[in-house]
Image 1 (cartoon, rainbow, N blue to C red):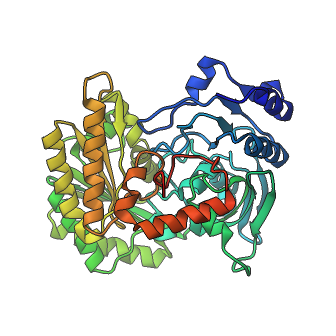
Image 2 (cartoon, rainbow, N blue to C red):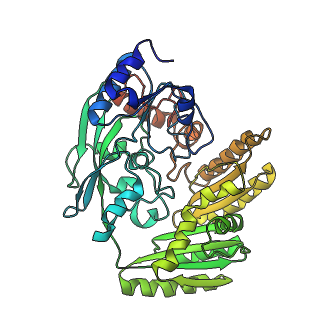
Image 3 (cartoon, one colour):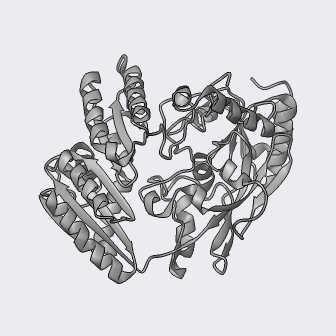
Length: 460
């Protein structure tokens, strides 16, 4: 509950139309794409950095939790106000402020939708490389908070590789700039520090993003298999041959059937697995790589191998992949995606372990893998109306994440820690490391009002 008079102070900043506190409104801001929920006490819609600064000053003085919110497409509970307080929704701060092709960058506000950057520059031969599968809805501010990746992360990197500078607001209201259009500026890399900090250090109000030139040529190969094991063998063979795809996606039969039913993309519904291999670069290089990928795939005996050469052939395949999670709503009212990462050599064992967990818990688990870097996206289907189903889904997800840690991996490949994985941070880092992170966080936010309950375990 907010202190007396706090709502009026906040309304003075954003106006009556920038302030929501009705029960029906607060319920809409209680969740993200994960499995937890908790409503805020108030939702604010700042329209400028000055608004954000004033909000932060009031919250700091009154010790009110602040949780930044973009499109809430996140899958780890990162934007859920688990301690109540104020949800700072950046929907009004959604402008592309500048496109500077000479310096290959753009300046955007945090509420800009990821895909809108690419749409603004693609006719000039550029794109914004980070491409989470929710890119048609997720915001750049959210991508920054979670250090989001996507299918093309092995080739182009994750969000931190495409952020050059920031404007951000500290608790107390101070407005700070870091980085800039020119790389390698002197001083501490505060831009890198804030990227992936999940809103627990500062409220970001402006982002300088790197723009990337489109490759000269792009081809997508689709290999269809009668077993997941054969598809995994192909992944290993592609790596052994030194081929570096722009993207390498593996998904199993249940996933591809769901995609095909919802978004006809050309995936054979009776297959056990498919590999989607994108190659990009200079035209002659891509032509050579296509043939090498064909050879690598044929060694594992696929049922079918074909190359999509034109946008008309390529786009449905990627649309199906990007729509995969949404399509699963046809099968289940809810799902949980614990996105562990394993070394690439451990992918076969991880997929077998996920299948064993599925059988043991009696839950359907679809398997999606960013196979070039070992990022797992097991999709655990459950019904929240069924007794014990939510608990079983969480327990199954935790087992998969613990397995990822045991084999030398991590608990997130781009979805963040949030509140759903915070209990596992002690399995991944020593107490001394966690204490160092907490001290760093407190240097920016001494009162601990920014996104409390996320990233670091309580007491660390």
